[in-house]
Length: 140
Image (cartoon, rainbow, N blue to C red; front, side, top):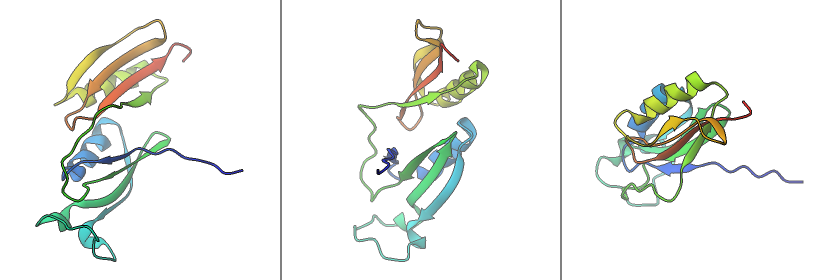
């Protein structure tokens, strides 16, 4: 029997180093690995914009028990739409801390509040344009 793992892979269009620093603070993310284009053992098969060798070719951060992959891509425009990343906490204070941290420089779409399905639920778009849902389940 094979195991499948779904991992989000986000492209930050030149802002990956900034995003990694932000998520380390906002979400207590741990950097598992980070390779810049200049560190690659092979030249990129894609043409890169001037100065792009300093940009992130591939990185992995761990948020809680989940990993998120990220890159600056190859110079294409950064676009996030049609999805949200969901953070599920057991502790309301920790959920509030994460929600407020993600809101800094971003935009709150729904305040963190009690709902019929959660002790706390809120939606926010961070300063990079990534949509997040922060939740403490009713059963927690």
